[in-house]
Image: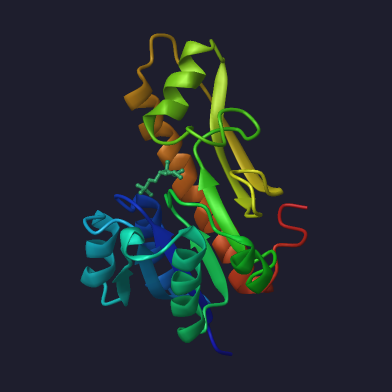
Length: 203
Ligand code: GRF
């Protein structure tokens, strides 16, 4: 059986990408990363890809007329590599309708909160955790969800919670949530590689 071809979009450090490399790509699993694409030239995730001999590309958004033109160029690279499953692993741009049409229910995103809390425009990085602390939440967590045309609005696949500790800083909370992210993202990808669908995941 041929392996599920995975494309990963990143904008930053790529610790979530690393967990997919280690636990899916390099393990004896039915999935391989065939392309890592970034909108940021210096994203460390690109280095992680190169170190593992995975094809990487950087596309500069400024070189495209608009966001649709950028999305189309990026999508073309996925199609050339015959990607089956797309993972947004810390990718800070929005995919357009062409992506959703090309990959219905086959694009997932990892977000560091319990969606619908602290998600959508402006909620990224430490800001998500600062908001959870400042609003006095007792718990937070991470969410893997299917991607639609909105920002963090698609159907939820997996969510895992943790308790926010007294006097915990946003930085400390981010580290603990990242551990959850790595675990549930791998779980979702592993499920897809086995079943070729996300239907009934944890169902
Ligand atoms: C993670 O918190 C992810 O949930 C969010 O961006 C961050 C990316 O971290 N979308 P990394 O690049 O995977 O380390």
